[in-house]
Length: 155
Image (cartoon, rainbow, N blue to C red; front, side, top):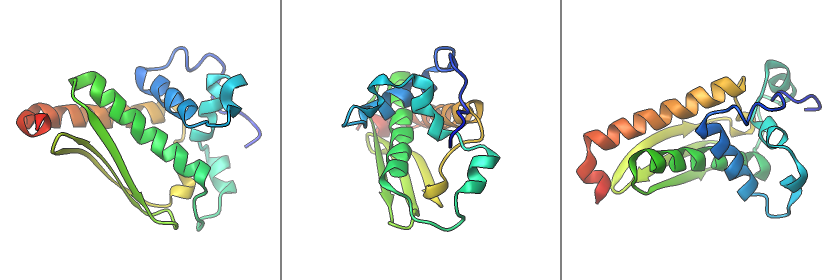
């Protein structure tokens, strides 16, 4: 992944969801590696173009860096849900060593996001726009579910 796929200045123009992913990725950097990196460089591994995806084997186990990216993605979804509805959202992820599992986001007793995870070692999005669209779509669905079942979400 030598060539960056996220253009300079893209994060400054991005949606609240994309900005929140950058916040989450930086929060997981316990060694300070990202301190000198631009937001675009921090976010770049989330973008897997067709060329980048071809470099990753079809079968493989995810390393802890990839798992951290998946966690950052679902943490960002949870934060955006909290921002939209004002209720605490809790992300949970169960993942096997082979990269299969499930990601949930709960608000109260209500499951608002339930996503099956497969081939996590190849987790990423074709472009920054697709990353943003997919995340905001999940947030919109979750907030609609919360409004429909508000009593369960407030428990």
